Amino acid sequence: MLTRNHYKPWIPRAYIFVFMVIQSNFAAAAESNYETYPLRINTESFRPPTTANGLEADILRSAKYMNERTESQCQRAESQASLSFNIFRDEPNLLTKEEADLLEPLYDEVFHNTDIYVHEIKRKWDRLRPFQGEIRIKNIEYKIEKCIRSHSSSSYISGHSAIGRAAANIFSVLLPNKAEALRALGNDIGENRILAGVHYLSDVEDGRKMGDIVVRELLKSPAFRKKLDDLKEKLKRL
Image (tube, rainbow, N blue to C red; front, side, top):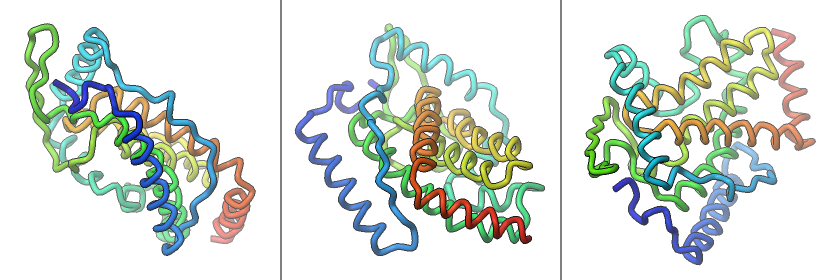
């Protein structure tokens, strides 16, 4: 069994949770150094595989990553587990110290503006992670072992994938000469969650989709665009 509720959420409870999550995140933002932007994001289109064939395909695609993983890949996945800005700061030959110092506050904003919608979806679907419980599809039992520490939140969607993708794409706007390396790192963050055994491929694919949507919506915000313009000028002066 891959979910606690067979992918049939109790709708009234789901709406209550969504309201509480959004309300609590906006309250936290008011007391923090990051700004929460009024993004127009519809989470209703996000849905994990629910049919037997869809689940089986998802497991088999994900198992390929896990079966071929190496110890060094697990170590890299572990180093990214905290999802802090240090993933970008510490990546060899990527950012200078001065660039990293300027980008870190922006990362916090992208993180929290993405995380609001990630957790809305997580609470709705409440999907078990690959290493949790028994996975049995068509009378075949699958055993998946994780190789890193993991949070107890639900699997769908992957917050690491969504936030890593969103941050990398926003940083690429500011540092176009480093865009290829930044986007590669953003994708790497998600891929490492699969091979580490803490997410299915569909969790990561749809997490990246959410990251792209958040970036698109953030770039529509005049306040956020002004912030980027100010950062561009500061980066040019380095």
